[in-house]
Length: 181
Length: 208
Image (cartoon, rainbow over the protein chains, first blue to last red):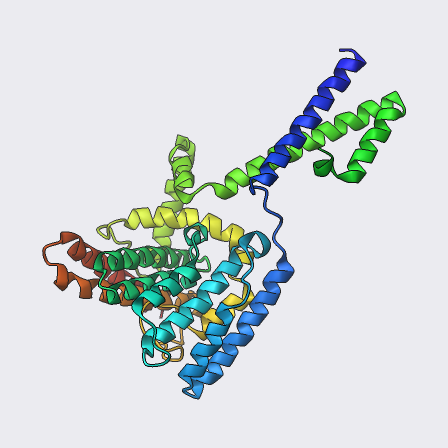
C-alpha cells in the first residue's frame, strides 16, 4: 500500500468517525457523563428538606409539611444524564411522601384525584421503568393505584398495584439473597 | 468535523500531516484508531444502556447451556438461602421462579448501580420513612428491632419493611376483587398477592 493510499484510507476513517460522532451527538444519544457533585448537592438538599418535614409532622403541621414538599417539586430536578438514576430515585422519594400526605390529609389544600394523578405522573417521569428496582419508585407506583381507585379506574388501579407488587417481590428476593434492596 | 475534533485536535492533525513522514503515519494511525475505538465504545455503551430489561432477559434466554447450568446453580443456591432463612420459595405464586430469575438479573443491575442508585442519603431517607403503598406513618413501623445474629438486623428490617409494603398492596388488590366478581383477573391477582404476603411474612418472621 502506498503512502498516499494510506493517507486516503486513514483520512476516510477519521472523517467517517467524525461524521458518526456528530450524528450521534445531534440525535442526543451521546449523553454527557453524570456529574456526581450535582447528585451530592441534590441529595443534601433533599435530606435537609426531609428533616424539615419530619419536624413539621412532629408538630402536626401537615399543611406546612405539604407546602415544604410542594416547594421541593419546583426545584430544577437534574436529568439522568447529569446526575444519573439516583436523582430520579430521590425525586420519587419526595413525590411519594408528598402524595402520601395529600392522600392521608385530603382536607389540607385539597386536590382532585385528577390533579393527584398528574402529580404522580410528574414525579415518576416517563422512563421510570428503566430505573433499577427500588422501594421509592415502588411506593409511588402503588400510590398511582390508590389514586386510580379514587378516579374510579379500577382496572388501572389493579395494574398499578400489580406493578408495585412485582417491584416489591423483586426487592424481597434481593433482600433475602443478601443484596441491598 | 472540526467542531467534533476540536481546535486542538485539528491543529495537531494538521501539524502531523505537514511534518516528518514517520510522525505523520504514526499520528494518523493512532488518531484514526483512537477515534474508531471511541466511536465503537460509545455505540456499545449506549446500546448496553438503552437495552431494556426484556432484551437482557432475552439475551439470558439465548445463553448457552453452560450459562443456563450456571444460572440454575445460582438459583439453587438462592433457594437454599431462602430455606436457611426458614422460608420456602412459593411454587404456586405465579412466578416464584420467574421472580427469582428476575432478582438474579436485577441483582446484577443493582450491583452495578448500587453506589449511585440510592446513595447514602437515600438510605437515610429509607430509614426515616418506610416506603409503602399504605398509609403507614413514618414512625409507626411494625418491624422488629431485634434479629438473630446470622441475618443482620438491617437485612431483617429490609425484609420486614418490604413485607409491610407487599401486604398493604395485597389489601388494596383484595379490596378491589369484591367489586369485580365477574372478572377473574381481580380474584387471581388477590390470590397471588395473598401468597406473596404469606411468603414475605414467613421470611420476616424467620428473620426476627
